[in-house]
Length: 433
Ligand SMILES: NC(=O)c1ccc[n+]([C@@H]2O[C@H](COP(=O)([O-])OP(=O)(O)OC[C@H]3O[C@@H](n4cnc5c(N)ncnc54)[C@H](OP(=O)(O)O)[C@@H]3O)[C@@H](O)[C@H]2O)c1
Image (cartoon, rainbow, N blue to C red; front, side, top):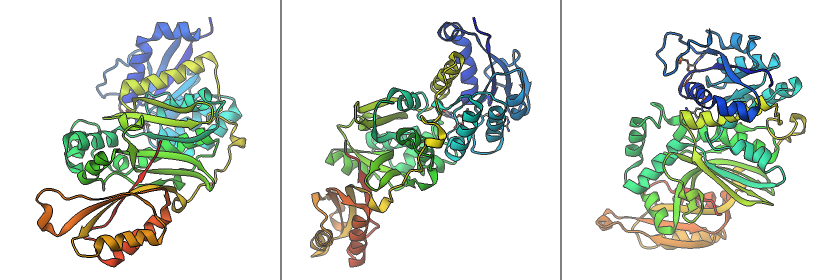
């Protein structure tokens, strides 16, 4: 039997402690599967005195994760601290520089420094593995990098943030407002005290940047992602979507287009019949459109200690077996600088909700503004809520056929300038199957 694989693990929070427990519980089966023992030799966190659910006595303690990464008593470094900079970055850099493979769950680190770290890993001929960084327990990294290696990928999109999906699902099933559902998510521990990173779409964007690189063989370019969050989604939109056969999801979408690769995160109307629309609650899902396999959807837990630990332990098992793939599927030098398609050229259907003053000529004026720009309407619905007759404002919902983003925005600017609207128009992109 090979020598044991000695792990140094930095970060003993939700994920780190779950990894320790899973490695212990599965020790025997992991030894049989990989042909060697996997042992945790040392750990690091901020506070040695902190009460934890695991007994740290068997492990050597390091106050400094960088010193742990360099220590010659470990063969593999696992980073579960979090954050794009600081000790997470310093310790992964130190481990790779010392020629040690690294496993991380840190999407922020990868979105900012993934390619540079992959280059160091390549130079040192060691693995840099990050299955847990996107969609928690769903093995999406391996699916894209290895399982679909024989495919050309056209589009990859998914629900990559469980907090947002929980909020949108609850709004629909319970008829509660966005604010009520957010407060509930915070109470249940699904949303942070400062939820802006999740609900603003930025967490999804970090994960999408990694998926884009894997799917299209491109250098990570997180800064060019167009990001919109779910803060503006109202119950009126959720109800209108349901009536029209859609469900609203916060999606991260990367798609090959004639103008380059589109990367966008925004609330999206997904047809109710699509696999992605069925995914409710805190679950995550990723759909891939590829030439040989056509459509593939993976659904599962996107967060939580145990599910995330499952992905980390899978990476550890690969390293124990001596498996090493290029981190982003291709040698770094051959990753392309993706040409990013500008959002203004996005071509797709749109849902538009207008709050229109009940005045003669309003509907005709709106229709004219759309017709002037050759925007074809699939449907136009004037919805009146019971009791709203006296408000003087009527909601009008339009669904367009495929049109360019700049065209629909110009049409809406003209509608606003006409003075028939009582509130800012709501615009939600439709993602067809
Ligand atoms: N939670 C999830 O469901 C989930 C899912 C997928 C990916 N991830 C990713 O997994 C990583 C860890 O997440 P988590 O939820 O486990 O975080 P967490 O519960 O906040 O734990 C972070 C750990 O890092 C330690 N730490 C912080 N600063 C440190 C420093 N300077 N030196 C050494 N240790 C330090 C903390 O030490 P103390 O305990 O002593 O304070 C703590 O043990 C993040 O990158 C996150 O994005 C998490």
